[in-house]
Image 1 (cartoon, rainbow, N blue to C red):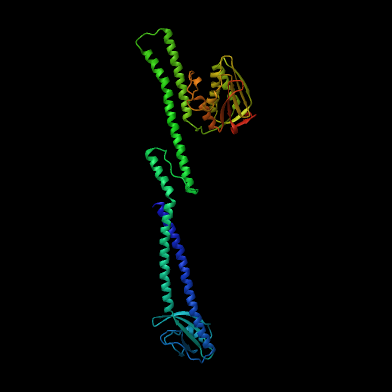
Image 2 (cartoon, helix red, strand yellow):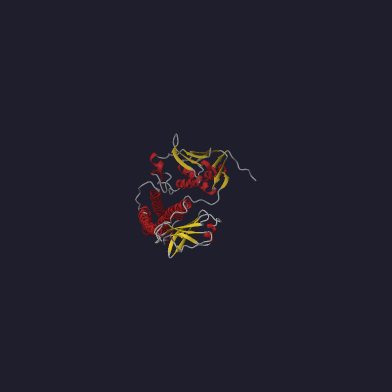
Amino acid sequence: MTLRVRLTLVAAGVVAIVLASASAVVYFTMRHELLAQIDTQLTNEAVALQQHPGASFRGPEDFGGNLVEVIDVQGHVIGGSVSGVPVDRRALDVATGREAAFYRNVTVRGYRLRELIAPLPNPLGAALVVHRLDDMDSQLARLRVILFLVTLGGIGAAALAAALVSGTTLAPVRRLTAAAERIARTGDPSERVPEGGRDELARLGHSFNTMLAALEDSLEAQRRFVADASHELRTPLTSLQTNIDVLRGEGQLDPVARRHLLTDLHREAQEMRSLISGLLELARGGEAPAERSRFQFDELVESAVDRARTRYPAVAWQTQLEPTVVEGYPDRLERAVWNLLENAGKWSSDGAGVEVSLGGGELRVRDHGPGIATEDLPLVFDRFYRSAAARSMPGSGLGLAIVREIAEAHSATVTAEQAPGGGALLRLSLNGSAHPNETLTSS
């Protein structure tokens, strides 16, 4: 059963309940009013008899009006214009004064009658005043038919209106459904649904389009990533294949050429390893290990600087590290710090210095190399981006992109700027993840 049908049935059901309740109230109110009018007539008749016991009894024999039958205290009929009205124990109790006057419905010779039994002054007994209910019954019958037709008409109108309204209201939902089915069928998230209005469904359409745009961007980024990764892997693989083919050749290589060839193979294998490691890091995206931990970040940085001194011995590494505790993922932050140091060491000439400082929850790495060109500043953290000056140097263009990925996983930020006096300054701000001037106590 579709949502539109369910909404239509619910609306029709609610209207049916409301109309049925209203019809019942109208019917019983009308019935009460008609009976009250008849009872008033019967009461007036009885009061007239009580006030003038000797008056003639009124009413035709054909039950056309209020008819009267008078009984004595023994229950004998002593006058009146109606015969056959039952005289039972309750009527005798009224005649003898043991019970007050009362109304009731009786049937005489197939006629439904409204009866009032009222006491008369002694020694007369009681008066049985009756009125036929045929007219009231016919009016109530017509009223029942009218109310039934009104209820049916109201239910039909409500169902039609609900179907039209739900059809119009659910049109955006149908468009969303159709769009989702087409996207699932074609795999193309470029489609958009029309937007308009300010209601919840319009917001749903806007959110759906936003989701499609994000999905399209994600798929495009994935395609670019695969294409870039394929391109970056192709070059070292081709070089490896070429060198291996030379080694496998029938000609004999002299020891020097062979050593140079093996050195090239080792370097290319290292570049492949670094490139694959970077690709795997980027493929993880914002995904992070399940468990975060607290660790001494200044010690991690100091360890990474010691490693950089070994890797780049000709560079003068200077540190000024403030004790800092970080809540995060040590292995990933170690990778980010190393990439920043490696970038600075790669661009530093022999004898140049690199200043590494940590304070206020921010790591700053400043080198004295050629610096970053103004047009390259917005792009240095993009995947596979390599400036014109960097294309002649080893690397894949993934190092700083990995730093940004790791920073985002820690709700941190990383920026690059031109340092005063030349060189580059890169800042890794850990924001709320860092606790400056804290030291973990050993247990």
